Image (cartoon, rainbow, N blue to C red; front, side):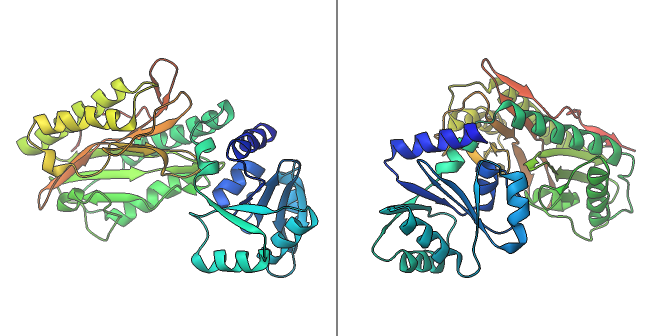
Length: 356
């Protein structure tokens, strides 16, 4: 945590910021280690304070030894303003993407004539590149989803509902040590597999269905994210065709990932393959996204992804084809950008699995 705090202070110095208020729970946890549900961090060149209420004082001291615990009993923004006055601070930066309009109004009222400065993605930019400890945790989260996928194959059969399969996946991941699901599990079967975010429904799986499973494990504060598509019974020619196009596009993008390329360039690799086969209109989302403490974070692999990939970044690679009233296919892996390419974390098979 000391190293992260030092990097944040260096970034604050670059932007000539006297103090920064961290309100976003994920950013707060990243900088402080505190996993409670209430509180804000105040960082200056010399001070590191974690402001919370009575419920969390002991927890702060246990999880955030490098931060001074400060208890507030009333409005937290008034407590922040009081701390700024005590330290003679003239200006306070805040996370504009994570405070509501009303909260900003409260902060500014409490600060009085002291300046408040909106900032964006200060901590998120640090989170984009993971250290070795973070990467090891994400590797373990990825191993959990691989094992869960292997086990769920034994239970996928006609007659089960999408909700039943989703529930079993969550149970399996928790049984394997996950804190829970990283997001609402997607189980989309038959025509519903054409819904990129087809969260599990009461639909009963039928013979002939394509079934898309998109799920992730939340483990020690970090996420994994995998998608595989299988078919119940012998696939028809159209199902085989779109599966192979997606598999080819996904593998090409994985093979292309390297430091120095932009998210836009990585996206183009998969998108061009799908376009070449005549399915450009049926792939409408980005090829991937950053992965870490949140399941969607920087960088983006999309036509608008201008971020440059760097060693230590973790991204998903997940192109798909979605044919309305027919079905869809998506294949997704988690990869670490390395010095000379990438390390693929999710190792579940990517050939078309036919469940008889």
